[in-house]
Image (cartoon, rainbow, N blue to C red; front, side, top):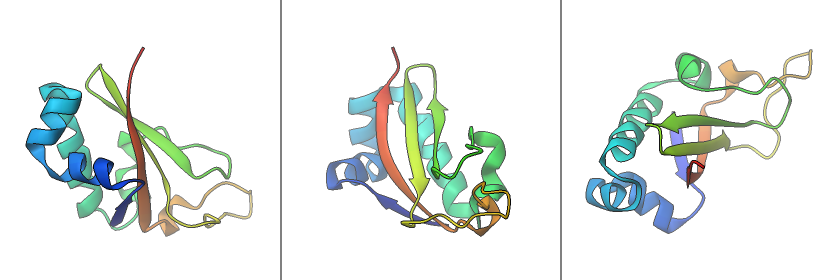
Length: 106
């Protein structure tokens, strides 16, 4: 799957292990590395759907917990996500995602 990033600092944090450790803590950074590796290995979002709380509406945005301290926010990287006849996102057709943010929980 093709992964892009909302900002350059976010890209740096996602690519540089030391930066991620400093910003998010070791547990969340390790979880972030695992999620990114799984996303890179997948062909579509549906391949890794068990890791995410995929929405049933057409927003194309979803999230994944990173340890207990942070949450990774993502979305389909198309202006209009591919939709099923039911109006839900066709996650099997989503091959590009954008990392929007890593936010602290609580």
